[in-house]
Length: 374
Image (cartoon, rainbow, N blue to C red; front, top):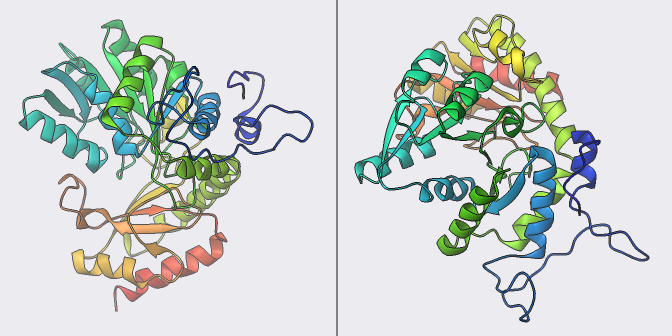
């Protein structure tokens, strides 16, 4: 199960990495290892320290991200592992429009005086760089959730590393198919494996990837002693999901671009946020270093909170739900969550585009938009 396959493209890696060794009558897929206890003398030692099924998943993610990977019980568990390695009082710079879970965690840790978080406008490269003075960690999320803002990753990573600042990138929206932050110089890449990698809305998992042996050891220790380990069955499901990940992501991204174009012409939509549109203010920046634009479209409805909620409630194919990255399309009004950033418009709908027929999706979306205005 070799993770070092530089000559292979991601579409091939997703199918081949993390397989058992080939031999006569060898299994094509790794088994689910349901063990908490191991005989002494081996490299695992105990069920909280390792698992053969985790390893297979981690080999596959490592091959995609280009760094040695660890899996965790959720994306938030992976995020928490990073912060647990920081010294008390560490200064963290992060986006003011990032994922609500991490913004809440940063706020809680700051209130407890365990760290000091500074939130910046991630699209303003000069503002981010100015905030780096004295920082210990730069947490980058690009595209951001849910506003799809783009950080100038190459510039910000280079600047932070010139100051010896730890850089972590949440790669959940873009995935390794679009950008590889470790190759840009980042120290750690985080993925919510629950989303595109697993892809079927049936597991909670997270991962961290790094090329720094000392950082890897610290993150592994955090997993061991915080107990944030993945379940073997969940790891097996996620690995199975990775086998079709490039196919799903390509189809969903194609659908997203087409829907973004149609939404931008709809009279009941006041703004579409999708960096793949040439008219999007983030387009040129994204195109400079990203290989694609992803499968999330956020747009603002021409109506109040109640009307926007009705849009999401009126669909028949798109499911009204909070998550993303599955084979099915999901949407929601993000500000329905009290923890969402106040800078996100009340009428903003985040649409996670799936792999359904695009014309069926459009008919459903259009009908829901019109129903909300009746």
